[in-house]
Length: 325
Image (cartoon, one colour):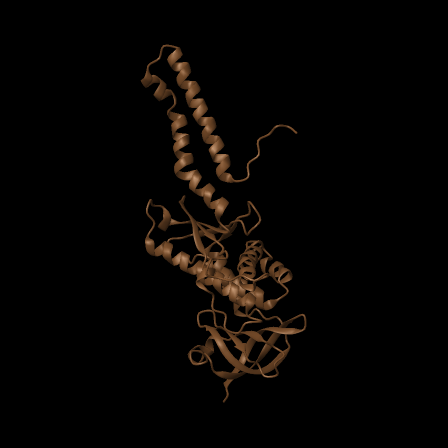
């Protein structure tokens, strides 16, 4: 053993730094006073140390707590955040985006065995940290509460953590030249890949809110790993999402539209004839935008190119949609 001090979290590191600064301040003051200096001289000689302490307590410590306690941590920067008091609408909008996208990921992960997944309030992400510099927002995963009975292997709690792990994995290669090829290779399930990329595309800044970059980190991702999303990321991901199915196989199915996202042009097809396929994620072109508004809860026949995973249809690029009785 070498006697080196180790720390279990970032806040402990900063507390130790603060302790050392206090010791240096005390030693410097003692030296000045023992040399015949005045109290004022002792104070001035320690001004640089005081500034470092202020930085630790006002800036570094909130960020350290965010790093220590956030399962998902976002660091945002841009013109709209270069202020002591960011606009409430901006912060609330970002929080709403995170809640929606993580919630959608959880629903995607559990949708194969539960047709109408509605997340209980207990599964809402908690705001665990808020720090400026430019802006850090930390979110915590839900834990079992007194009003929620948790069984061993509870799928919703498992899916909530898996959702963040998936976001971390899909953003790991997001800024590499061959990013899409790497992501396709890592995510064999096209439905999960498409859902994760859809979430990343929505979370990446548009540039219109005064946010120019968003970094993703947190305990659910490998420690120390930050993934940067920019408006360019958003454009690139949305281009990938236009035609994500790379297959010539065509199928026709009849089922019911149980969930639809008009912005992303995606819907979930359920109650599929035959009973062997619990659900299928479908993507439709912009030429169907007006008709799509009427599809929710309608029974439809769809035909298009399909991508499978382990022999099961998972993602359908729709070419034809016909409403049926």
